[in-house]
Length: 160
Image 1: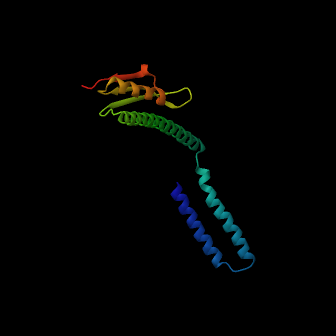
Image 2: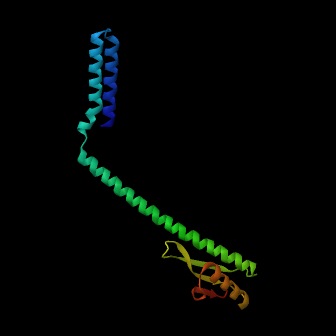
Image 3: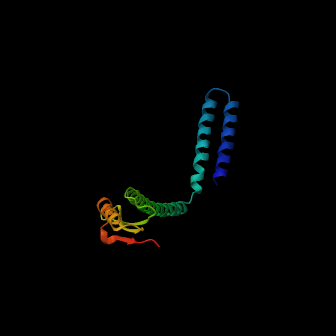
């Protein structure tokens, strides 16, 4: 439909251009210009007469529904990525602090939870380490104080 309309508009434009170039100056040229303007206007507006507004409204509604679905999906993905980023950063922070305390070869898994403030916050931590009690206690305190994970939500496991 659109291609045919463009072809018709081009053909009418060429005919009007030819008619205007062949018409002598004077009153006849002004009438020809007026007629060409009217014909070009009709050529531009004629596709609108064939437009089915019910189908157009339906297609517009479908596109809006698809847009809403895509937006909702993108928001879910963004929330999931934000959670993963928070968890990974907390895990890296705990690993860095463990390294400062001389605890090497530990494995950390942090779980984030959605807070009432609308943010992902660290909720629990699982630490697998073969560490002495003093270093583990210091690291547990750092996790509690810096990340806000209380000791009752810190699960400590020994290696091997």
